Image (cartoon, rainbow, N blue to C red; front, side):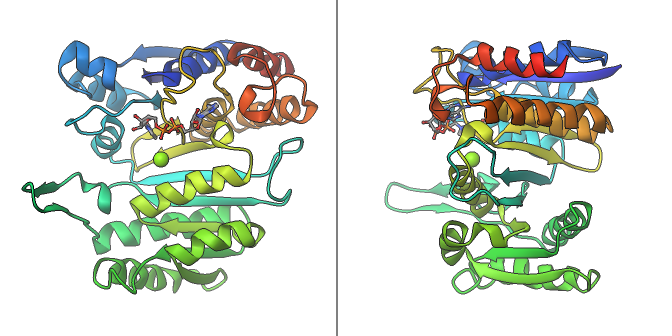
Length: 329
Ligand code: NAI
Ligand code: MG
């Protein structure tokens, strides 16, 4: 029996979470769900975007599933603070081409490893009407830790190369530490190739030669931006799952946000949430089940019959979910 914390959040976060729960219920595994609130609706109800109770439920669980939240003016981001509270320092975002989807190339298969606890997401900003300052924190400890995750993941995925992305020509001190730390850690992995690029050039290489990347490691903001760009290479945010991993907790969520433009229409693609649940099952050691889920998603997408509008179809969220479940059982 696995104790899962379920945090739908706002907008399509709740819609794709409903799909995910429907699918989990159909698996040959036992789950106990505990529900937590977070986000914009939660703020309007409780005066906070992330109640202590939600953190408690999440930290006591075996794993957390998070949908997405809408940002609340003047309030901290619940997902950033939840990642911090759970010390899930590595954000793992796999990107791959799917058969039947309009991808830039059909041989894209890399993973972005994004540092999750510091960088420009410190949420420390101050100043006055004339000048505002945002702090960008980079520590050697967090940089070493995230590079180790990237190299170990490269071994696990049986790939050959880790690419470090930074902007050390301008951010000489902060990204100087990040890059130096990467090459120090690399010394312990002599069998793995290394390279590093400035983030602006990398944004272009992802479009011109995405097939050449295996594992990409970067700081918080750059990793966030490059992962949406990368999702765009392979069919969009509806196919982009992620896992946030620490030493004691795992939190799994789609890369996308609450998508107010399509919320309430029942047309959100549930695949990124469902694939995030598969990453959760990997984390829990249920590899057979997670592989089955990935195969079922692949099959439904490849058949091109039942798909949501973001992939050119006219099916609704639950149609796709039920088609995936049908492949599973
Ligand atoms: P978004 O990721 O919500 O949407 C970007 C675009 O992708 C939209 O056109 C949307 O319709 C489409 N899209 C996203 N997920 C989709 C899915 N599953 N199926 C089909 N289409 C999908 O980003 P946006 O619009 O910039 O932000 C909306 C809100 O979400 C904001 O309040 C933002 O702060 C928040 N946000 C929250 C995140 C989180 O909770 N982890 C992450 C990113 C944004
Ligand atoms: Mg993002």
